Length: 114
Image 1 (cartoon, rainbow, N blue to C red):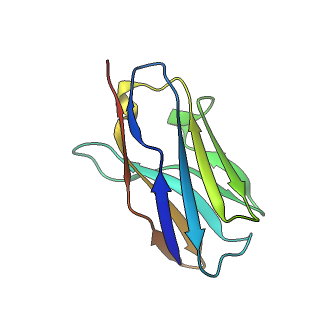
Image 2 (cartoon, rainbow, N blue to C red):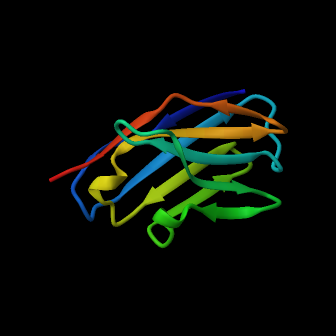
Image 3 (spheres, one colour):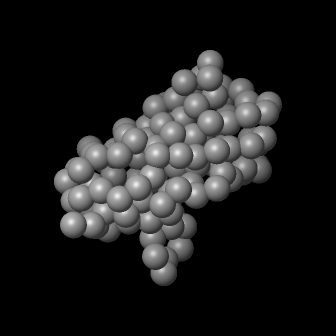
């Protein structure tokens, strides 16, 4: 399994960005796909996840602002990020969980600053 994330960049507070992640390999709809982030100087944290069985779930700090979606046919997962705040600045990683194992993509930097 390989994951390729894209879409990061510099955005002003209140702005929006859309992250994309392309997965390849043996992917099934029941595999959980999601996004994590690692703010500067902090540990990696879960942001949002989606699977055919569980639907979409979000960390409290992004609820109402971020939307995760998935194209099961194309093995793509997206993260629409609106109303961005400086504290959303982080390296964002996409991941896929197959059983007890998690595969990680490379990170994409999101910087929210005026």
